Length: 108
Length: 146
Image 1 (cartoon, one colour):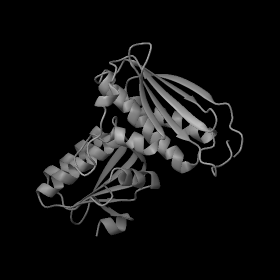
Image 2 (cartoon, one colour; image 1 turned 45 degrees about the vertical axis):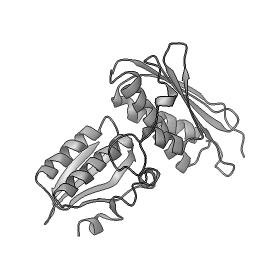
Image 3 (cartoon, rainbow over the protein chains, first blue to last red; image 1 turned 180 degrees about the vertical axis):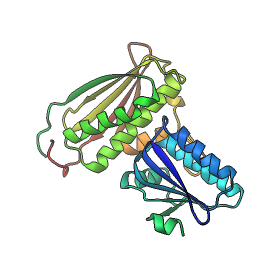
Image 4 (cartoon, rainbow over the protein chains, first blue to last red; image 1 turned 30 degrees about the vertical axis):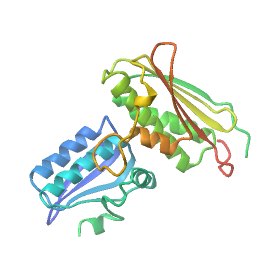
């Protein structure tokens, strides 16, 4: 898994690539925390190049959602592949997260 | 439904999370070879990764050098997967997911396995550990086995 961080005019964009699981989610957590500590808003996570997320990856995103809420920020996800979107549905999280179809929409 | 090929895969891994991607691909390719469609392949992959993760976390308490055996067979239109460990036997009655209406990290692995597979069972094995059994039935309208 690889995470690239790009500054936005307002907020920050994290582009994630690969598989997010128990092995790789700690690295994503570190990148998210670095930006949560800076109170970045919005925090956009682009998952277009993510083929697979498991419950460990979901837990990492839930932590970020809760942390961003503490300073009144917004976390947006975009580019969910069908398997990833289905995971959010199965976990009853599809309406909890702000999920956008495209990066362009998410960074507005 | 087309006749299913005789598929039998066996692999042995150490209980390290670095193997999760390989475990997912082995199960996924087995599912595709057996004629499962993409959506079911995704579900099977998710279930096997959640199962393998639970073995590392709960049966082996995070130890990374213990054996986990994966067996995959396809008898009579059913993909049958077993994950065998030699760790602490997990009492099935104590394996529960958190309520879905509580939005907090963790506790979703068992729920995801049960949501994606037709059978999720825990059996005590001859090593004193646990064998996790996962089964998925092939849908009648799914493609021809590769």
